[in-house]
Image 1 (cartoon, rainbow, N blue to C red):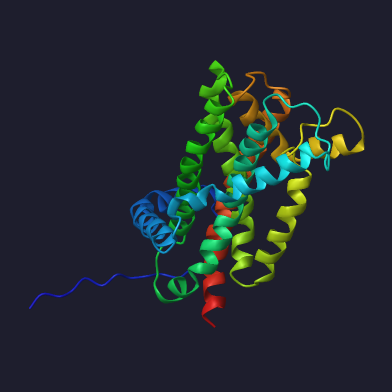
Image 2: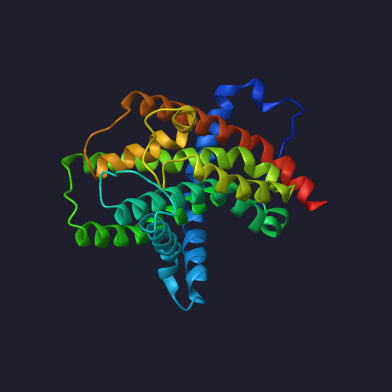
Length: 285
């Protein structure tokens, strides 16, 4: 009679923070090990997201089109004064809104997947990083669908494509990673308090008004300083400029925010890994 192999789990009172090198290595190992599970969850979530929707994948860019049409009509009726833009305003606002919504989705994704995976996390032991990776995959998938709309807009308005567009994906990825990093810091709290998701939704509307989405970057004044202090401004505007004009207006600000993004993402991954076991325990009570 063969004996089944029993896995022995050893609990230690020592904090993993005391061994940062080991903690970092384990974090990256768990991220790598959860890739297969994250892929299966991604496929399931995408199929479930669009299966029962009449418009299907069109919902990925319907909000952008509706909002862009609203702002365009308001601008042409002189309800809002925007000023000159580098490309025709309808294409400008569609492109900017798609970038903004991609950032917002990346920020809300960790919060959403932790809340949606409440029952799964408390019943089945698996790496919670798989939820984050699957949510990040959904963000990129949705942007891929919206990319079709951007191609149509560029063709309709005959916008010339600069050679610098090959670098635009790098700026876009940094924009997504910045949102993901913020979401990683907030996700553990969202598993315990519903207020986090509501505050994030409210803050998103205000944050958009402080980001040059429906207007160009202001040249002077106090509001211009506020807009330039907004880290999303540098990532979003650089992505837009690399794809349209080919001239980056503030390369120094872009690189400063890019480095800060990587630091925030790295620390967010560690905080998420350390906090989630305690959050799962609280969620199960």
